[in-house]
Image (tube, rainbow, N blue to C red; front, side, top):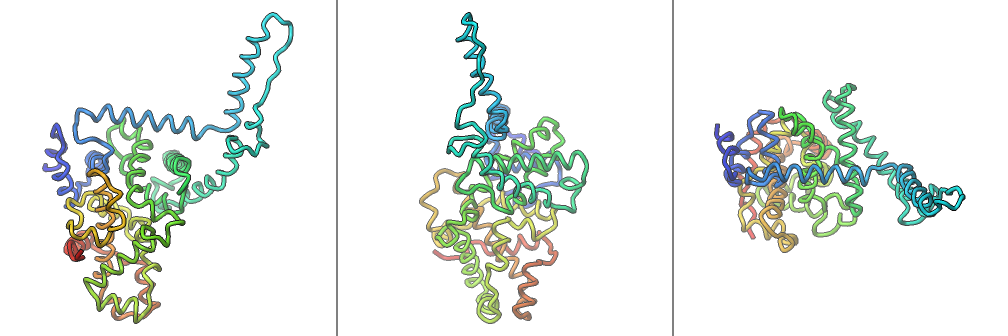
Length: 378
């Protein structure tokens, strides 16, 4: 009832929506898609603007497909037709037959930087990697890998989204694991009972995927791995958070048993915990991850993200910073929940436990994570 009332307001109260989402979004396929789109800033808070914004974004995605997914042979064919028509027009009345021409840069053997054929061949490795990874996405779920026409169609949508993202972001392109981050978004939107929304799940998932990655893109950029904003720095912040909350556990893990947090936290953080829990539990976890109403207390930010704060402008970007901090608190809570087993384990036992995290009560996990809020002083 609370969610229904919150979503039916003429102007949605984002703070209230985040508070409700953090407590758990109802398992209603008509509710969660709207909630996630609002939390990620894809939908504006003003109801009156929804139709306009959706039409604009979906048209933009359609344009991306037409521009970025076109086969090079089709580009060449269109150019040939254009040239042929122009020459026919210029040769009218001369008695000479027009001759088709191919621009040098659009020849299949061209090595020109602007050649669509050269770009096509250079990008083929990325496309092949995307194809392999998408086929491995949640093999236990018929939605993604059932062999049905629907499953195959869903795979094609994931491939298009990831391919377009890679082409629009040449500095990052595609990194293994992005398919796992995309999967929850596409699944939630595709299962929307509103047929118009379900039919546009691909475009909606694309833009929301971009929003999610906006807060984590540095973790996917190999050139930044050793920088203050790269994945190793993020993992180091998790280690510091654990040390400040439970120094005994931190010391046993990293000093006594020498379990480097990179051995387990790299996957936790880059894949947003999508591989550590059952898919349904992951969806529930993302409700809280996307909807954390406060993030860490303001005084926590300079310690955890001091190198990034100066880059952010506006509430949406600030929320992306908080989203990262929320993820770190959840990861720290995961360690605390298996504290006894870790303290009793050696290197082999602890590494196996953390790389194969045991089933757990997600509500209890989130409760522990919430208790860590504000524990990191400035």
